[in-house]
Length: 275
Image 1: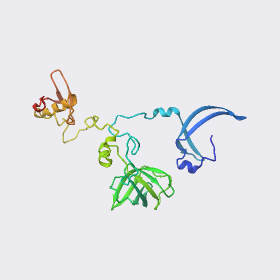
Image 2: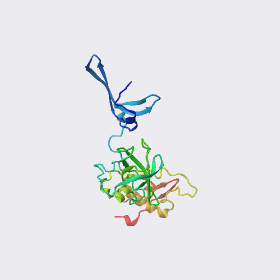
Image 3: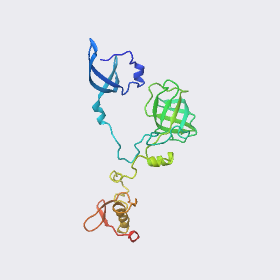
Image 4: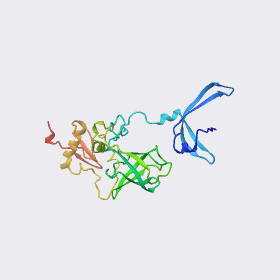
């Protein structure tokens, strides 16, 4: 059991002890200088019991389950505004100050002072409360809409304490981690930390529909097989990103073929691509 006057219910609800470091020592009660460290860990999930809070203590092995290093993925793996991203989140174009007008739900509200920002500008961004019961706390924004020129913000999670009209906050823009957003919204394509040109899984995830279109657009007729030849060159020889979706290529003994469903068409060389 652990009891302490320093650990209050208010601090637990505010999350001040989340991920706190925990050390377990074996101590000689007659001489507390004689001690040995038994284990280290961190506070994990905290549950409210009938008479007390029950905290999970995670061992150091829990860290082994976390992602270490970069991930080969199409989206960016940097945090908006960090050193790898380089976007300045203190500029007037990405930062705004507002105040709550009316509470819609426990985590959604209308806000004043953000009429100069387009709808969706603060989606996936962060909000920091500067007044009210949640002052000093930060939350994530899941959506930002405009209704008759009034901003409607929805948070990812309801705050610990209720939001009331008049609460002031500072809000910063968000990013959906796509290269299109990085370039159009922040003009920061040079610092994009993803791999947007890796092959996707669109063809694998397709499902049957009544209107057809299951053969792949490049192999319906022999006369269109030259597009497959272009795709073949793009994959194996030339840096041409012109491979149609839904087309799979292989190299049998007799030459290049394009496979789509149960139909195949021999790839016809395109004279325009010949050296």
